[in-house]
Image (cartoon, rainbow, N blue to C red):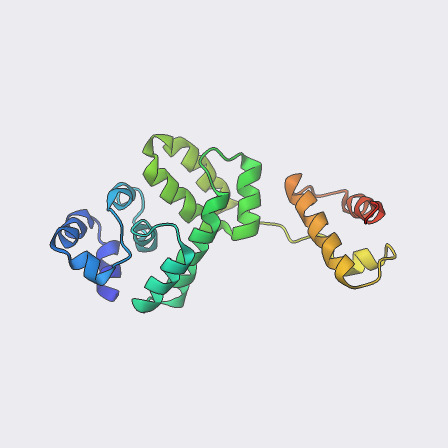
Length: 197
């Protein structure tokens, strides 16, 4: 695994990876590896060996986890591979800025950036879109949820499952409105007064 990661970190790993694929060595070291098309495209875009590694796999969190464990990769690398796969369904190169922020809030910036780089490798003509998405994913810091159970209790709701449901509903509405900084009490009060049943 250390040798593979060293190769992936090389300035120009494509010829060696192509030779490994042709001779069957890659299939022995990394049987989960698919075609090298995405790898060939992403290698010059990103020197990050983890980004390069993830392009060798299908987007499958379980397969990435299993391969990382079999290769004895560090937990941080395994977790990053898995996080990128879990974020992938929420990411597209056509995302709005608000959608990028929502994905970063749910999946964290690194996972969204990794998923964007993978998509860009598959659609290099969309590099401008990818650059915009990467800038947001890398620069935007997700805010903390501005309300909690105490805020709900102050509105007369008995602590319990209803509190959790209201927090989830508030969070979904807050994310959908692109994380407004104000109006939290009114938003929460409106959810509490909605007839349920």
